[in-house]
Image (cartoon, rainbow over all chains, first blue to last red; front, top):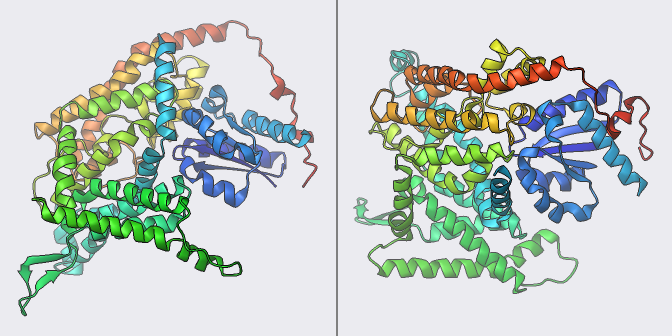
Length: 108
Length: 450
């Protein structure tokens, strides 16, 4: 099971996107788990579940640098979700993006 | 111009979020929030704003039915400083990368060390002074001292620990035992230093750190919270950040939250005692009287999109956003319309909340609707209910509906410009821009290592 975890301030709007992404993943029977959390829980979640991809909502884009500084060494791809995909709650595109990140990491 | 402003605001947001002290305060309050909301429900049941309700309840459960409910309220609101000191102690220990529960409890003890524990003015039958902690010191009046104590005690704790002044035990000792011995000397430092503070305040006119911090820091800051433009400044800044795609309140709350919190609990204590409420700009006011449907008060915009939107894009976005919008979530609008860096929508996005805030403030200060009682509801509580329950007056809910309608009128002309633009775009034949993601087919994905 691959874990794609989304973080934003309260984990509210990201949870909408996460459930859309999960829907798409289930439709195609992909072994992917998509979940959303509040960014204050990030450390705990990373420790406990070791996610394969970390995506930040664009509204907490300013936390990208600190997040990479703190967790970049773990080798987990960390990215901010594209504005447009986020606004349209485009689960399919964000899922594809996550898959690409996982694949790129596996290639290394 | 936007670029220049963004170059100023984005680093501010990053600096604030990187700052360990501010993150610890923010996350520390988050720890106590669920408790406050649950306790508020008890308070709401005890004081449901419908005429005849108390008599009805007394008829079923007997006189004094609400007394037991208020014990839950006291266990959270009256000891809010303890929750604050534990919450911030815990989260600051996390930031400082020392044992968290040790950080939380050492902060808690440090706070109690400097708190008054004996009341010579109250004596029992044997003539002995009453001993104990009073709610007066553990409640809203101690919030700022609680913050300072948590930060200072964990700071000392972490400093001593990082100096390596700890008792080391041989290998093979269980880690839990190791941890408690490792915390021994750092804890001793904190306790001795706070004992020192206690003795210093004893010889001053203040007597206790509580009195000093309340008079010198908390009262002046809450005075700023009574300043007429307090909420306007807050709303303006929060929504300005949102305009640049940055979660506004997450940034502004790092500074404003302690003031909001102190005023909310002060109102709540007055409400419980049946005294007049004092502060307009409480947390519930911040959450429920300026922004309806999320930052920029976009519920109004969504309603306009749904009802008079002509372009496919507006209609679709309206349908997508209405349900989350009712619960105050609007990232779809912020990033999907988009609001971010969109000069057309800037004016209503910033000014609708400001106008809402001014009108609500005027209504409250003229006594047309009551002030918020301090009852904390989740910020996702829908419009009308949030106004009604947070003030106890149905008219506050009606005011909210009126403000949403006013917001529709203000948003309309700006919305129209964008709607026409999208209509024109949609009429022109479009070539879909492809990118690498479109090449990925979800049908034939495999993960090798599963």
